[in-house]
Image 1 (tube, rainbow, N blue to C red):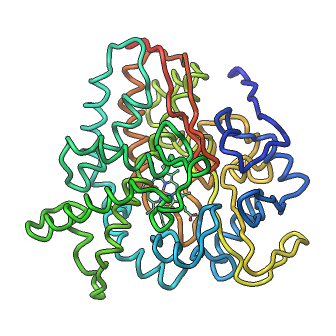
Image 2: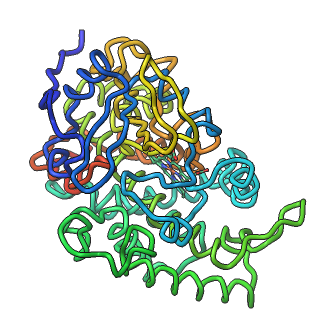
Length: 419
Ligand code: HEM
């Protein structure tokens, strides 16, 4: 019988908007209370107009699927943006069908299950390379040495980018996604005046550097087409649709920002869960076939992307509460993933959980994560390669990202015994 691990569910009345709260961990007790007592609850904001929190799994599903009632086009973060800001910063994420469907067709080819299956050999080679660099070391930071490296090098391989640019690029992606954490950016949005950058992604001047880099990479592919993902994004679809230059730059920036840190933090949360459960680590090592299923429990457990926002397009009644047209509505994926109505014993890490309808990648709705197959592949291959060489691991020090949006360990120092 595996040991039962007591989880610290945190404060039951935490301010869920406060970035600092999440440096201590997700306040699961607060989400548990909201799911039970107030599943459609209103939160006032000191710097915004307030928002509705949707915390139950089936309500998150309802909101995500009804894109005609809950639009992504007016912003997907808590931040209030005026029309000019929204237009300037629009990516695939801030679109509704049918425009979203057309755009998604343009970018989805390299991320389809069939395309991703072909990347397995490259992912495995990179995973082995990354692990060889750290193998034998007793104490190291798993985040910077392993979890950051694999998604970063794989993105470099996919986009055909030179290896010596990758650290620089990923640092810039981190500055965008980590725009509330002073370890990642000098332009911490809630601490310094970022109004001069309000038309840039994540209100950050760093986005300009990524745009310039993307322009250069695209010009090079136009002059000398290769068989990488960037070149394929420059080709028209079968219907003759083509991405414009602005859309390409935004999409490039989105891949660098959204494709790296999310996978990295999910890998780190997974290793932390295994370090806390030595018996599980051993059983997965003995039965590597079970890793594939375990990956989805790791994704549920880490719930790296904690929320996304929608805007009501008309008055809607949900669980007896009227949400008015124009109101901000936040779907808390991190709460839905621990809803007892959906998951038996959600605070128990069940590596064999099946079915496991977690919403770590969003839902089976138009905005379901485009990189889901890639992220799953990278996580599976990493653990398939790592576990046979790892006898034991314990975590000696952790630091969490300061963010109400992305949950993750920015440092996970471990002591490892290698076989
Ligand atoms: C474990 C890793 C990942 C997690 C937890 C994650 C999470 C998510 C979530 C929750 C969404 C839904 C957004 C919404 O509801 O509006 C999303 C969308 C998206 N993700 Fe991921 N993601 C991961 C990895 C990746 C990777 C590797 C890439 C690309 C290289 C990627 C690219 C995207 C894109 C482009 C979208 C927008 C899709 C759309 O709006 O149609 N993600 N992701």
